[in-house]
Length: 384
Ligand code: HOC
Image 1 (cartoon, rainbow, N blue to C red):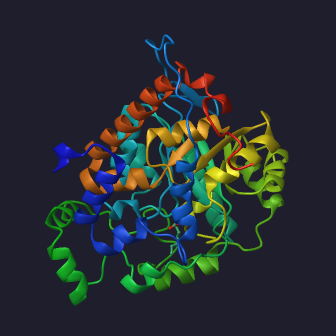
Image 2 (image 1 turned 45 degrees about the horizontal axis):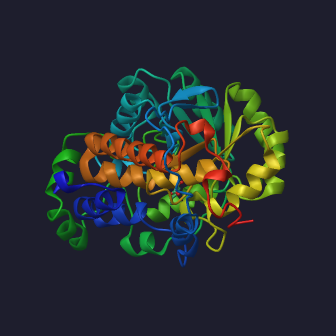
């Protein structure tokens, strides 16, 4: 029951019960063998803390900043596709919970609720995630809409120019909304709460690309649309163009290599995100946390280095910060809590992460998130 939820894994299990199979699987899967997806989570457990005692830890603070924006803890909600299918109006609910908690929310281009929906339901600036598409006019329109909505950062995804195959999505016949097949109807009959919520909203297909991607609803039309639209010729010159056109804070997502990290620094971006897209793209790539130290070292203090992928607790955030991340992003922890309990679930999940971070920091004998570095770990060189 919701009262017994004490960790992200509990949210995952509840979401699995409450969210229709195809959307739960969409959130909870990786590409091909899912080895990278699994490594993202497993590698965090290879990092061991140094427990310290008899240090005055009575006053502790997690407050930090990400690209100059004050945050209650160094965690932002990651951009996730089809979020409004985990729970009706999911992006709006996630943005509201993040705003209430004091952390940034990132809206995906492939969201159900639109940029304008989020702007209407929040009062703080949120972040917008963009892909590089062949249709530059469409990109410009999206950028202009994000500007008009007062978004305070553009998060540019660089690792989805081709699509990693996700077996479960194909097998489930992923579509939004679900097609009324017998299998889907049987599954939906076991999800009355989700159905009731969904009946109460009109937001059931892609809010940002509507009008541009006519007829895109199921996996095959979505895959063809992304294959047509997402520009495989993307190169660093495009990033320069986007930076100019946007004119605000720019964050590059999907950096897994120290050489690319240097190019990201040279591009003038404000931050980069060490990310393998939650193990959903290049299966066989290393886990994000194992790639973080090398990239952090290559970048130094020139721009902020963040990471995402595999964070399932506040302890994982502390591990990432210790290994050089100025910020982190959570995708699945957000989706599980949203699917399980809507806005209240997301808020509770953020509280849980903060509490785990706070206590872990105390066990390490530190009182301020800014004082965390490799010295709080027993094996800081585990991924060197
Ligand atoms: C067929 C889905 O980044 C993800 C998102 C959105 C991808 C759009 C194409 O699922 O990893």
